[in-house]
Length: 487
Ligand SMILES: *[C@@H]1O[C@H](CO)[C@@H](O)[C@H](O)[C@H]1NC(C)=O
Ligand SMILES: *[C@@H]1O[C@H](CO)[C@@H](O)[C@H](O)[C@H]1NC(C)=O
Ligand SMILES: *[C@@H]1O[C@H](CO)[C@@H](O)[C@H](O)[C@H]1NC(C)=O
Ligand SMILES: *[C@@H]1O[C@H](CO)[C@@H](O)[C@H](O)[C@H]1NC(C)=O
Image 1 (cartoon, protein in one colour):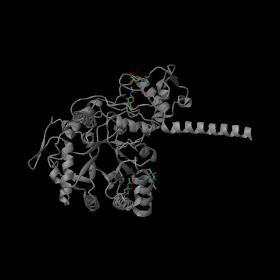
Image 2 (tube, protein in one colour; image 1 turned 90 degrees about the vertical axis):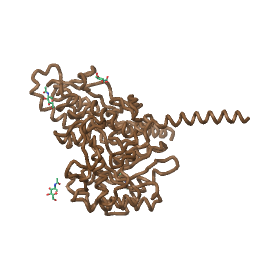
Image 3 (cartoon, protein in one colour; image 1 turned 90 degrees about the horizontal axis):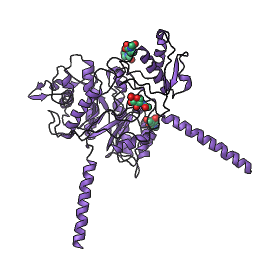
Image 4 (cartoon, helix red, strand yellow; image 1 turned 120 degrees about the horizontal axis):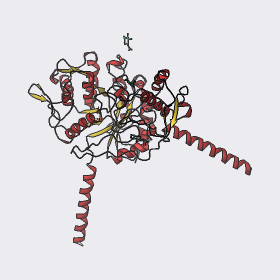
């Protein structure tokens, strides 16, 4: 008996060891942002399976769409639900709305086997200078109201409020982190927010984009954007900086220190690298960035100001999003680790151990038919149709055509065909969307050229719902017909 028990104990130990190795695949300090500003978003259930298949245990959302949040139920995935900026005013000024928000978007999901909600992200980069101060006076009251409603609902220990802020809330007069301080126009608000977060043991959430440092500043030393310690370094009060992520993070640490909260917890709410739409937005540079970042996360090396702290980060983002504003730049629609259809773009190792492999693709994605829309061969004078391109592109996504992008090498005809196809796919391959004054035709031969992908759209979630409704409608009609036959 005793030896049998021993054998069982050994088996258990082995099992436990094996399980531990499997579950350590993705580091505990790593999450992903799941945005859905896409014309054809993937079905949330497919996305949750993709998260599980890749061992991702933390996710950050930008709203609290109930279908999306429900899809996470039972998954144990730590979830940050979001509140868009346009709801801040109402939540700041009307406590009853905050209570309703918590009831509908938090309480409804908390039950045995429900959703593991850990944070509510109130607003999204509300202090961006581009917003011209619109949300400056609204953000803190909205945070207070939501936290109060969470506390009243009994979640004060488990669910916390934070606010994802852009790194432009602080600045440094030099390139030295120790010169960092919060922007003077929002200093009072930042003090209130920081004090409130620290008192609640909640994290300060900041989005840091080394890509933008490079994109916005032609003189930026490129190696300083990456974490492979290949470039020059900056010395600041005896501390050595070899990359802009560390320098930026520590500028925040110094800014916090100067208002008396130098030790508070920080989460990087967004960090990543786009793969198209700009000469610096390439798969090669994205891979270089993620390799360095993931290795850093795996090590216990924090930043020079916090040398023994494991950084906690949420990668941006999961998917390419073809309806995001391109005001910041064409790259804005190409931040995904996965393409629009849930296919991974490049090999990566979430454990930071250089054991690269392709991520697991989304399963069960339904594509539209193998059809493309291109310029007819019979069109002789392309100048007569060039104006159609503007229309097609304004109604779809042509961000890969620009300088340094994956489709920049097309000839004039290829350019127009690309635009036609994007419009056609955007319109779910509707026949009327491939006319363009009789200059376009639908083909079944793959129209892609070299590295330039002419995509085929996926069946959009909305469309499937419509099909389902029609089925339900017909079933209902049939049932009523049959019933009336019996009456
Ligand atoms: C709950 O969240 C959804 C999605 O973000 C939003 O549309 C809805 O208005 C929220 N509910 C309340 C009561 O504010
Ligand atoms: C920003 O605010 C100023 C002053 O209130 C106003 O004159 C300006 O038009 C605003 N700009 C935008 C883009 O809203
Ligand atoms: C194709 O379109 C892109 C973007 O509009 C443009 O930069 C490029 O010059 C065009 N190529 C040709 C051959 O017309
Ligand atoms: C079309 O060709 C491109 C490039 O060769 C390829 O990546 C893509 O998967 C093909 N599309 C289809 C639907 O076969």
